[in-house]
Image (cartoon, rainbow, N blue to C red; front, side, top):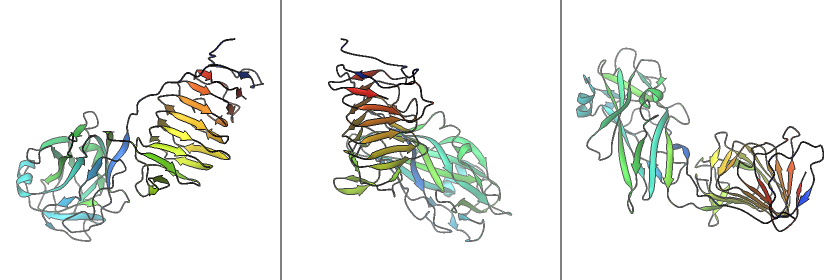
Length: 371
């Protein structure tokens, strides 16, 4: 009898049940941390010197200050739906820096973390119909003193329009990286510099839930071990979504956290997907379902007599192990592309259109069923 059996395409026949026996082979991968949105600002001010609140940070290890506006007080009604300030006329960016004709904020990488900024969203800008700066540029500094322009110059009009893509034209291909120290954080400073046109008001849109976000990736830090709190819910990195527990306290999920789901539940994964460490599903009965977006994890381990159903394509860099119960797949890439170990477990298909898997199957010390 062969001690290890590999199966790649095994559903050509109508009957899909057989028992095999082999030795456990499994490898564990190291996590890679990703975060689409690093920092988000919900601007609640109209004319004051600050945006109203610091950034929300879905990813542990990143933080952003409140945005501060230069110039003088603006007008609550014009430009409409903005937080605006009144700026003097500056002929160019250098003059604007000197005149404090800019909006500024800081971003901080906690000790041991690295932030890589590669995109922006939101940041709708407008001036009044008769006056106000006509050009906007994004500048950054790693020491708070020497500033460098990134991206292209955005032309501001009286129509509220997103400057995000224009200002992020450079960092989209050459990200700006902030590396936290060994034992202390590192802070970068940003300025949205405005000049040209006429002296007057220019504002940032404040009518959206997410008025401005900085995108990118984060690495480093220490992963937490989270436990699903029970019941159905959404799996995302929203700081206000707290279906998980850590040290018995409710918490939100942060990219690269390890997770355990021990009771029956349906987890609706964020449409953009989530990046996690290890995933353990240990329900002794009932059904756990992952639906919605994709899960990108290091390993997936199924234990207990309950059932786990995976409905979409996922990625598990260290493979999958099913040590009991039933593992249901509704997509040919539901288990990623690496090895799957079945140990006294059943692998079942919920979609007749799924006739093959791109995984190597190995069977542990107990029997395994494929149907």
